[in-house]
Image 1 (tube, helix red, strand yellow):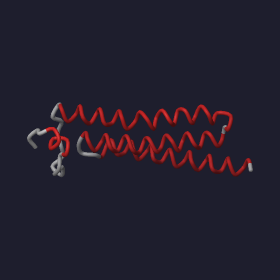
Image 2 (cartoon, one colour):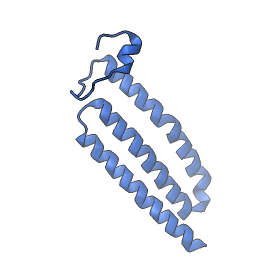
Image 3 (cartoon, one colour):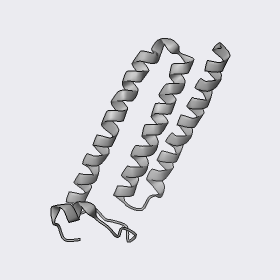
Image 4 (tube, helix red, strand yellow):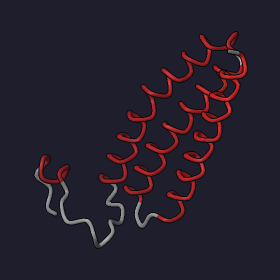
Length: 112
């Protein structure tokens, strides 16, 4: 059973590291701040949760602490990305030409 947890932990660590790498690549490749926020938040949240799960499999004594860290990340990452996107929208950040719908501007009555 111990080797099965080690294998699962290793796979989760690799999966998490891959998503963290893809999140970093998304920050470089995306065209505007809104897409960068999306790529950075979604990929790093999943990557970090998978990495924490892998560490919990490898070090079961740390599982409670890692669970609390994961819960904190799940609660704070979406909130912080929403605040950053709203701030970028209010300051008139550049949008890519592919942005065709702006729901926040529609909701607040701002001109598109």
